[in-house]
Image 1 (tube, rainbow, N blue to C red):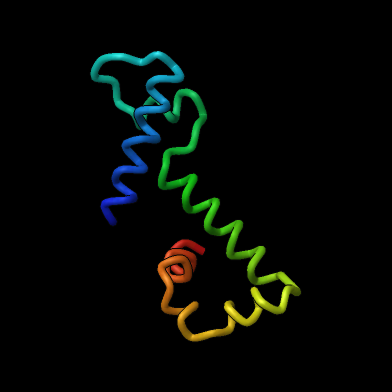
Image 2: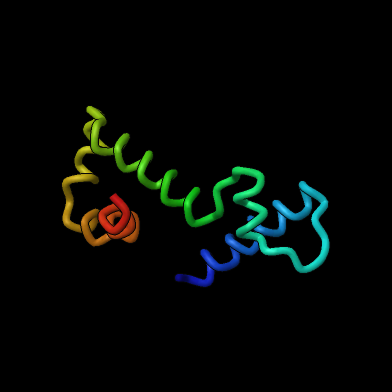
Length: 85
């Protein structure tokens, strides 16, 4: 996981704690489950899959050209998408 993703996950957890006024050593995973909220990884996977399905189904010529080029298949987005179908 990149440093950006780690920082984003920590920020997501901190925002959750601030919104619910949670202090002290509570398990963030348990609190996400208790409040029926997706953690950062789940939210990222769902957002990425939604984007990929929209990219796959578009009739836009520019997006289609990007989608069909070799560098798209080498992209981090594509690798995440095929790892989490």
